[in-house]
Amino acid sequence: MHRIGLIVPSSNTTMETEIPEMLARHSQLHGTRFTFHASRARLHNVDVASLARMVDDGERCAAEVGDADVDVVAYACLVALMARGAGAHSAAEKRFADVIAAGRGASPPIVSSAGALVRTLKSLGLRKVALVAPYMPELTRTVIAYIEDSGISVLDSLSLAVADNLMVGRLDPTALPGYVSKLDLSGVDGIILSACVQMPSLPAVQQVQDATGLPVITAATATTREILLSLGLSATLPNAGAALQRQSAEVAA
Image (cartoon, rainbow, N blue to C red; front, side, top):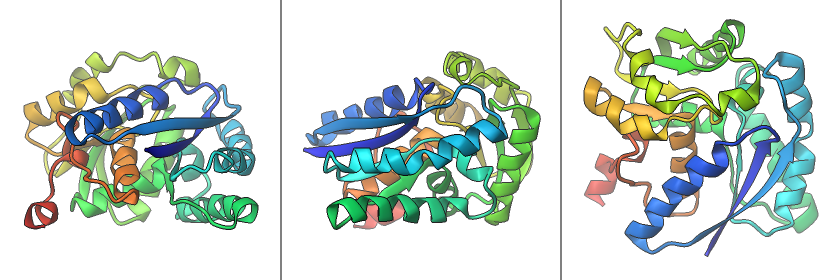
């Protein structure tokens, strides 16, 4: 049994559906078992001030999920960390680990959606991407700047301009292929279909990848990939796009 700790914005309704769905597929394939244990930090609107308050509450959340003796902790608000500037995911992951270790003597691996997205892009060799984000345009530019600071170019993007985080979770994932059709994909080697763990995307990931012939990842699939890898498990799942496909190194093994 693997216990998954989740640190979630209070208005998030997607992380606790998409990540468990992907891990349920893992259970069907490999016989693994997972339980989920969440703590929530208040967030209503996706703006800089609200995001900053939510991140400041993250240490309380880390201590709470740490009390459940979880095997990995996933921090799920990509833009909240990216709004703090280049490399903020590394500092946040260490800070949350330190909080848990202070209470329990040791910490499980900490995975942030911001760090998972950047690390997955690099691991897959995706250096030029296009992305879809639910944010207001200014916050989308913040996300783009963060990704580009890591050495990955964002050649085109689309902002859906939804400020209410609860409404982001109610966006229709079947609309994503249409949004992708508005992107200029010339020169890109991958697509970030949802640069937000709150924007539902899982039903469209494989569809868009098959239609475009380009690797497709999302904040949620990247986070799931790192959860599995941190547990020493195979990060291979059906119909979930490039982040969870069998990689060449895994084939060789």
